[in-house]
Length: 153
Length: 153
DNA sequence: CTCAGTGCAAAGGATTTGCATGCCG
DNA sequence: CGGCATGCAAATCCTTTGCACTGAG
Image (tube, rainbow over all chains, first blue to last red; front, side, top):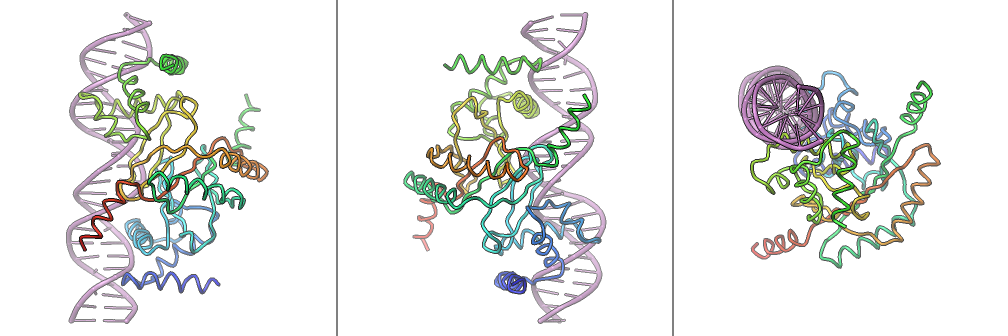
């Protein structure tokens, strides 16, 4: 199954006359094993000797090819994840303190409710293609940190 | 009712030893009359002679005070809107072509479904505080533009 | 041999900060 | 008067681009 993924990625790249290079494979592998969207520094940290500019360029190519997806976040740092048709549809838990983003699978009932809302938007002239649902709050790690800080007071 | 709003804003600013200056009032008024989050240039265009840096600083202060909210967007340009407790709870229709964001009220059933999902996230250690739901697609304006372009082919 | 891919360094654009001045409380 | 607010300009941060070099086909 992992082989299928790489074959798919390679195919999508080939359509743009682009190759599935080691650098790009590295990116895909990192995103695959991550539990959520990764930042540039995080992706860079994975392998040494990689140039930032190449990473940015590769991400742009991969995004063009429909392999990765750029996730805008509040802290101004872009994050990237694999395109939804390569993984499962999911949503995000966004920590407002440390900015990390974790994947989260929503109940099917929620998806249905979103689809109905999309239909309503369509009636208003907007053509919905996808949706984005984030739960914003405090992640477990930051919460325990906060409680420790509170005790110290 | 609008007076209430300004009083509330002034109060929240005062809590931080900040004043409700004309510049800040201008920002709040612009956001109030807009049908969605505004960019810095849009906010700047409203009044002449305003310095960008002051606007950024004022937005930061207003965000601290819980009056405005920063909305991260895909095109790298930050957008701002009034805090939800000053307006009504709403969601966004994001145009992937021109980047504009319009407000959109979701059906109550959807909100309930989101709340249930939030409860599930909470069980997993995450503390949800709010949520964000965007429908991404093409706005009516861009769609008609696109159709015209298609005809020309 | 050709053209995509890479790394380095410089450029670009959005946002932030330093500093002197203006102004409200 | 003191401290917040403002404008201007310089600085910073993330991201993009230019250029020369390497490597795969």
